[in-house]
Length: 433
Image 1 (spheres, rainbow, N blue to C red):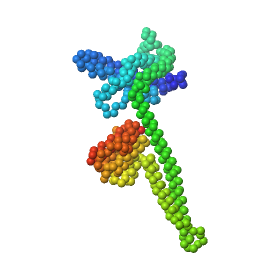
Image 2: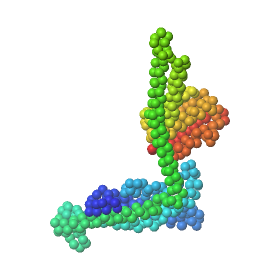
Image 3: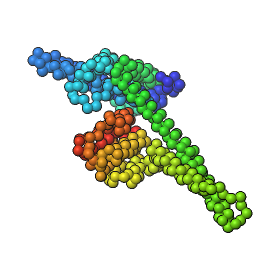
């Protein structure tokens, strides 16, 4: 409708009009197929219900709105830039009976069935009618060519009235152009009605648990992204501010120590000097050592916030650097196709570092293995150590927060740590960004 209001006269000849007709044609085909299948399932289910065999068919008919609604939401992408979210709750790991019970209790399931039964048939009929009008109008537009090609055969565009020649078919061409022009506007209006009804019946609502879960997940993702941005800002401030000041302080103290040593040397040579206070040089050297220690601690803190190698070279290089500095020997086997999305790399990196920290502090491990691959669009990463086992993610090891972050990305974090070992931490997260 926005495109129609912006260009009402040119709209039938724009790409938006073609998308409307493609949507209507696809919806008409989908509606016909769905209607035939629904009638067949219902008829067979009622006919066989007396012997009990038809009950699964009736159940399939009741749930037929699920695939029809999913296809309709995909079809909407032809005319809607923003995809219509799935109103159903995600049920990862649930069995088929649990999924079936949940879908039957959801209001969205019955709204999709209502759309399939009550809304789709009349809109499908209207779409077929407009498509027929479009094809007939297109035929009228090229009617002079048809008459010329079929001559001397008799051509009747109106029953009982023959068209003598191509020039006599020009009025039909004008009628066809008018039909195409009006059909373009009619297609936009029908598409708008179809889209609004689809958004009303096939999209999530506030009262749907699935919609609430979707919004909660989005809000958690926004909070996580805001936290990540704030962490990056702190990293930049520490790197460009406090760290540089400590470097300057260390250099200043080094120059002061150098001056004091020269001054002390001049005193011992008998030169004219005011003298160096006892212990001053030792205090400056001590201050310089403490400044160096503070600088090293600050550098470690900055690396812990977000390592620069992760930003510059990716996950494999960052994990390899951590493995080199780890007190326990770490074997790294990461075969990645290239750079992964930023949130995926960050989550995977801190998962590995947390697992390595736990292995060094609590497990008594003598060897750790980091193995990672990308399979079927998902990063699968596993950290295994040969320690004593018995790790509990709920015991304050830091894995619970990482598991929450992984859940926001649509993945999962699993820990297997029987008493006596070994401990295996497995990360699975989609790489779609």
